Length: 204
Image (cartoon, rainbow, N blue to C red; front, side):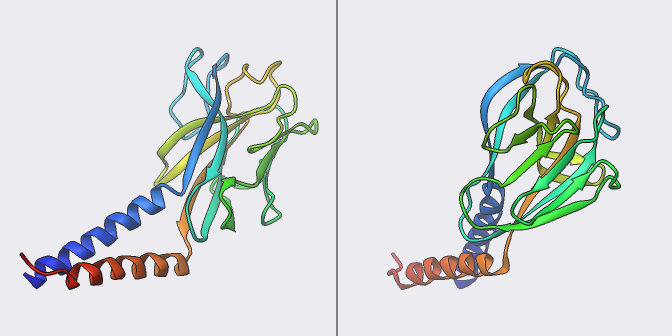
């Protein structure tokens, strides 16, 4: 009986941990658009003209602290676009090798603090203003790129005449979140307290 009890607690903890990690980020759709050009960044399946893309922002919804990592996955652009992690002050450039990452520790719920910038000085701020003709699109969720699965893959549209025109492959990043050790500790303590309270209950 005790073995079953402890196995149940461990399974519940693992399930809670996995759910907690997966629920840390959520993409909030504010608009939709159709691609007017094919998304054709090397390493990705081509997404054709006419395919739909969700536009919006990526939010942190977890509790505790998590390390959010942004990874440069490629681009197909005539401009020299950039990605800025506003929390850490780090940036990703088109001159970086594909796979280059920057990270920051996030503990406040709401839109993640990052922005894309085009050579012409046009910005698309996550959860904030987008300069005319720029936008942030969702390319995929839990997406395998190369040998890595990213929670979210986002693409930047730098300037195609309208925020709804383009292919969203001008600068592509993968985003993932991992709980900080102290957050895992909080989760383990919580599961332990649940187990303790269940143990105190009379067996029927």
